[in-house]
Each structure stands twice: as C-alpha cells, then as structure tokens.
Image (cartoon, rainbow, N blue to C red):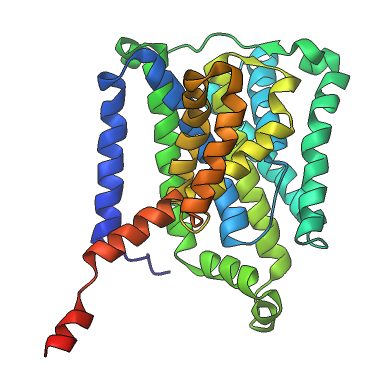
Length: 328
C-alpha cells in the first residue's frame, strides 16, 4: 500500500488551520469559543455529508437522525452505565456507523429524489420515536447530562476550553483520516460511482460495498458530532433533532462546498454564526435575513465558499502565459 503524497500547499493549509484553532480560545471571549465548539461539531457532521453526497453522489436529508442517536447514546450511556464521555463518543460512532450501513443497504435500490425522500422520512420519524420511549429517552422532556468532568492535567483550561480543544482535536483527526482515505482506492471508487455507476461496475467496483460504506462512514461522523453537541449543552431532547437540523447540515455542506473537505470547515462556521449574525441585525426578521443571505451566497458563489476561494487563488497564482505568448 502506497501512502498518498502530501503536497506543500496541503501541509501549509493544515499547519495554518491548526495554529489558528489552537490560538482562538485565548484571543476571543469565552462565549465565542463556546460557539466555535458547536461549529467544530457541525463541521464533523458536514464532513460526513460531503463524503456521502459530494464524493459519492448520494443525497441525504436525514443526518439529524444520526446526530440524535449519537446525542442520546452519550446521555444514556453516561447516566445508566457511567461510561466516560470518550468511550460514549466511540460507542456513538459504532452504533451510528452500523445504523448507517443498514440504511445504506436499503438505499442501494434508490437514487436521486427517491433516496432524498427516504432519508427525509428518517429525519421526520426520529422525534416521535424518541418521545415514544419515555422510560429510556425521557420523552418530550429529554435527558440532562452530568456536567463534563475535566481531567486533572487539563483543569487549568476550564470546561469550555477543554471541550473546545477536544472537539477540534477530534475534528482534525477525522479530517486527516478522511483526507488520507479519499486519496486512495476508496476515494477513486466513490467518485467513479458518483460520475457513472454503470461504468464503475463494469471496471470491477463493488457498488453495494462502497455505497453502504459511504453511508456508514457518514453516519458515524454525524454520531460523533451529535455526541459532542450533547456534551456541550449537557442536555438532549427530541425537538433538538427535527427536520430543520438535517436541512441545516445539508445547507452547510452546499454553502461550504461539496467538492472539497475544506468545505466542511466553512460550512460548520456558516451554519453556526450566520443565524447569530442575522439575529443581531434584526431579531424579529432573523429568519428572513438568514434566508436572503443564503440565496445571495448561492448566487455569488455557486461552487461554495471553498470553491470560490480556490478559484480566486488559482486566478491570482496561475502563470500569465497568454499575455507572454502574444508579446513574443
């Protein structure tokens, strides 16, 4: 197995992002770093959507359901079994990955709008199901989590900064692992199935395996994101996992850019801070301002924020061969 070659721009991009993320909690107010914790969790969930939709071409409107499984797994495992948050997050990833694989197997017979409708039903059903099993999930009132315990070596950070670093450390690990995986055979297979499934199958690519794997991978990431948000809020309730959450994740993926993993980072920041910014402009019309802002962004940068940045960088740095050839 040959490791993918890492170019200088990629290394530089990771290094700059790591330096900025490590410095932010010491440069901004505590509430901003707390909001950035949510942005990091959303970025992890959106990363899964970019892998599923951007790289494999499968549309999902139900990723809020996987986040619900992740959040409730942390809450129930912490209360009933006394599991440490880190083990609960791992359990959430495993459960969501398994459930995602099952959904992926069912989705093999569906594509396009039919797959979107099937996952839409998943997002709509999650809240009533959670309310139905009151003894386990707390019903409509939800569950309150035990406040996060900061390990002794990190006590000086405080709970908010500790959770911030934990979230973004996990995000960095998952981004790096996803990037490496997508540079090899797995990434080529996913893209081939997205571009032309019949041709990909004729070249020996197992469509059932790779499409189910993409769903499982994406669902596991959403479960981790749901776990982190549950730990940050110390509370889970069915109303927090409505269809709006699933649509918000898809909006973040599209606005950030479905063609690049960096789009997850941009999408996480947008879905967390754009509604806050809209509310500061006019609290009474925050939803209207939010919607107008989304429309403007999609008109101005249809390839997403990261796509626009990449295009601008390419325009600035490309060699000016055309003008040189004319003068010669």
